[in-house]
Image 1 (cartoon, rainbow, N blue to C red):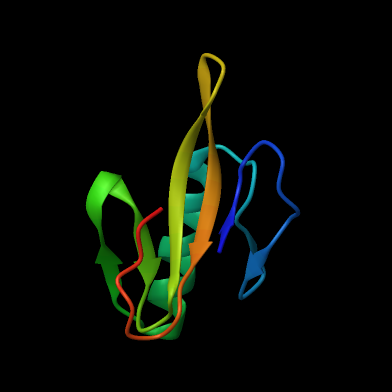
Image 2: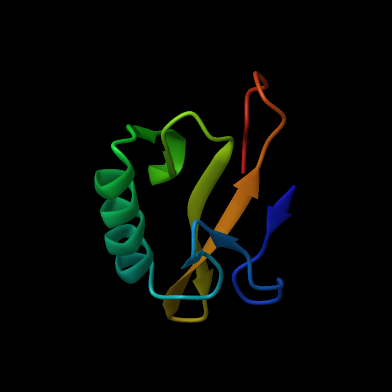
Length: 82
């Protein structure tokens, strides 16, 4: 399931708002969360990233001339493609 950055509902991961924000702000908040919880950061294609063992991928979408954050949620063990 993908929650789009411009039209999707707000979704949080451990208190971090994932949708419709500046990608750099989400990256900073997720990095802080990962560091505080001693998780691993994983990366995927198209510069997607996600915290530790979760099946959450933070994505970047175009919004006109700007970019906003979006998120994909995948079934455990599946190959997630945004």
